Image (cartoon, rainbow over all chains, first blue to last red; front, side, top):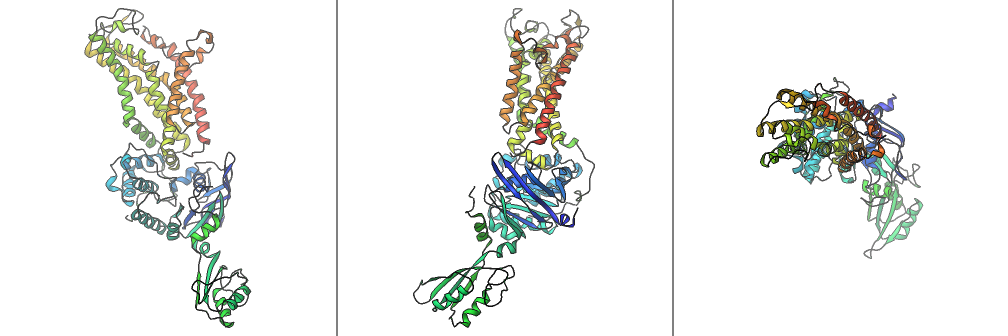
Length: 334
Length: 288
């Protein structure tokens, strides 16, 4: 095992899955660092769940390989899966059994789980998701949110090194969503790697340290959340009475300013502003790293005698980045 | 939600002695605690009860009418069980087996619980084996329900005495009861092949009703083919061919030939359809 392999909780290389003529997952290379909370984003139908199914050995890849906790899937499935807790494509239970009985059943299916501690572990998992009071109730009578919680409890039946949670807050009320966020944080604090798939960006922004974005079966971006959010472009907004001079300065930086006169007096100039990784470009021309430093723009404006009455740079949110990469609104299937 | 750590859960990486009995126990508990299974066993037990009550309240049955042995019931209550078994073999027993065997994998797939069993991880081969074992236990229970209910109601409603076997010998009621249990065992063996077929069909679909119906239809088709003289060459290979062959167990001494032939034939079906089910299930993409 390489050092890089040890550092990754989950790794795919050229992973592809074809259903008939449709390439559901198209040669993706995921790298999920150990200890990260990894957001797996993408519109519905972009191949997230299919990827998760291949990671867990439920479906066989058409091409490529998957390594989970440093071991080959599905070849070493029997050694890997006891260390992985999963919620895949929504919870699924026996409606005619109680919540506790369902967990007993799934725990019994894991031949590495000790029967002697089963009762205690089920009770603790239920307690952890706040379902102790409904443990004896038949799942048929559970609400969607309760089933979702039970699904998460099932993933927590044993101590796990990796948790794969597919849309964990689906169907939860705001209270439940917050509890799940706290739960994910506490799991990560205990040292587990948490892989969360979601189409809810706000949720991912709040809890994740890393993220990857899928679109139409391809992986279009991945990395630490801060990097993902900052790479790309920001929006520059300048308020000044000297529209002509200001435009000239901005053009020198390689920007394409748009001049508007919303209230007659001052011109409002807007332009997209490429931001490099370091964003410390020096005065004059576009920074060597491909970005333009906002402070350099202001300095140049002032030096040219432009009266700057307002200057803002809005960093792109993850949502802007997501929409820019996937090219579509949320929840749009291909 | 509270922060709790489970102290006695296995630490990552450590391996406990694998326990395979848990899943089988869970499967049996789930199967036999399920209302549907209980209802089917009750319905099977109701068959001899209905027969016995009808015979009891009606006037004497003329010999040669109705199912075999029907006319003997009023003389000896133990014949209720034999008659009920004859009535159940062609449809009622295969019906219940079709439901249980057809549901094995497709039922889990339909509920979506199959993915959670596999992720647990149950192991595909192990899960298939446990599922078949559960169906096999039901194969034993179903004919047993008919036999015991028949013997019970016969004993309550009719005189019970020495039973005349097909060979003409008289045996005591306790010996006759043993013969009944042998017939139930014969039927259990008969149904194992059908269960293997049902298990295989169950791996092909995510719709349990489809697998159940297909299994039941196959048992009927096989019996129809067994009636066509033009297909005589095929008859020894049909899994239903020996289903009515339990008469040999009612002779003195017991003729074991048909029991052996039947067991061999069913073992062949188990091997073939078990292998097909295994081949299909271990390579199947679980997308339900």
